[in-house]
Amino acid sequence: MSYASQLLFILPELVLTVGALVLLLVAAWGGQGSTRAVSLASVAVLAGAGIALIGPASSGGVAFDGLYRADAFAAFAKVLIYTAAAVAILIAPRFFQRTSGDDLRPEYPVLILLSAVGMGMMVSAGDLLSLYVGLELQSLAAYVLASFMRRDVRSAEAGLKYFVLGGLASGILLYGISLVYGFTGTTLYDGIAAAYAGGTSTGLLFGLVFVFAGLAFKIAAVPFHMWTPDVYEGAPTPVTAFFASAPKVAAVALAIRVAIEAMGPALLDWRQIVIFAALASIVLGGVAAIGQTNVKRLLAYSSINNIGFALIGLAAGTEQGVAAVLVYMTIYVVMTLGSFLIVLQMRGADGQPVESIAALSGMSRTRPLLALALAMFMFSLAGIPPLFGFYAKFAVFDAAVSAGLFPLAVIGIAASVIGAYYYLRIVKTMYFDAPAPAFAPVDDRVEGGLIAVSAVLISPLGYLLIPALGAWTLAAARALF
Image 1 (cartoon, one colour):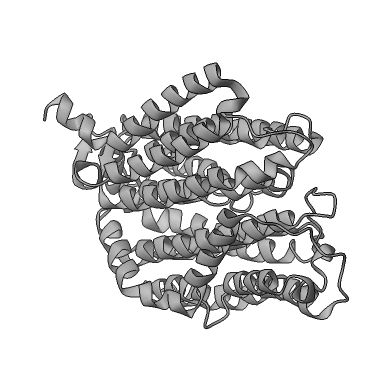
Image 2 (cartoon, one colour):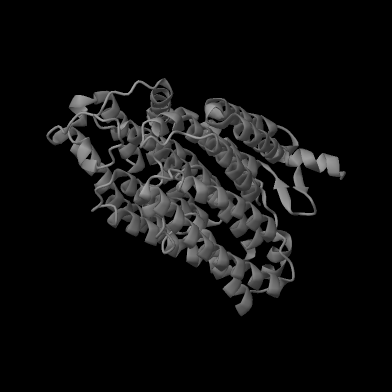
């Protein structure tokens, strides 16, 4: 295969890279006045990268001697990543315009584009070193985004905590990679799978544990979740919405590919780790959220809780399990973005963001449509029928039962009741508590339109998408087997 034809496999990453570099130069020469143009151009670049997925970039196979995989699985994950990244760019201008005089700068959309390049490399990696390069590219951009509001102490703190703990997780992952390489003699997924098929030695087992520990940090699974609440609370809300969606999808897709392609023969070994992380994340994500008073911290624990449910599908280790995880992450992204879009609408009379749960009191009387949308997102996150979030949980539990993990499904269903409590508490606050001061009116068609679209998608109308979504996710899952 010629080098030129292999470049077609990485066309989405090339589009994003060239677009980010060109827009970086535009930002350097245009200054603050170029922010709007750079933001709109960045969304166009993400759309171009999505279009570039049509063709060899989604079905070409292996490129660059196994370092990169262009398949349906990676293409599915990239569609979710690019969509969430575009939303994070579109919702940023109004937030930064009214927050502490810290206006949006053109570097923001450029950093998201560079992060998207890293996430694309993560989900398409066929080698542990290309995995690590993509992971670090995504992480370096994320550290800057978390501390983007330079005059906000919480934002600076969030960036520093993310950087320090991210460095620790990278060290753990690298140590695991070095152990795997030392005992297999290769970093290619195919070679690693062959080594695990020949028998799992103590060294290979330790390598597996450290690799999964490093990946658990990136997906914010217990016990490597400690950074999530502080970073989600301190980072600017559009950045938090981005962290809770695009990088989460990339990290979960990365973990799936490593588990199935590189360490598939060691299923019984890593399944124990995944089951523990799943149940611990569900329980801690539910219990720790109960006492929260900040809505962004609550959504952070909600993110941890939802990752636990997604891992139940991965624990199955089957095509149906992987497809269920992809279905879950698709619906999760819609629900999470919708929830954070409503958080963006929470503004006091002075125009400053309001993040306390108490501020939602009586919102059903002051902002009835907004309260209805948030109630739908909360019920859907809790997995209450007939909203689409119920189907997401049903898919992963069904995959677990089909794989013979009936006790895991039963425990997961029972533990989901814990999370339902704090979601319902939000609904109770909005509909039954005495009204708090009304939020300042917001006239933003972009945010309003995105909230409406998200609400429709997670409504019972979302079930109409099941045939198409099921076929697409199953085709993506089959690419790994």
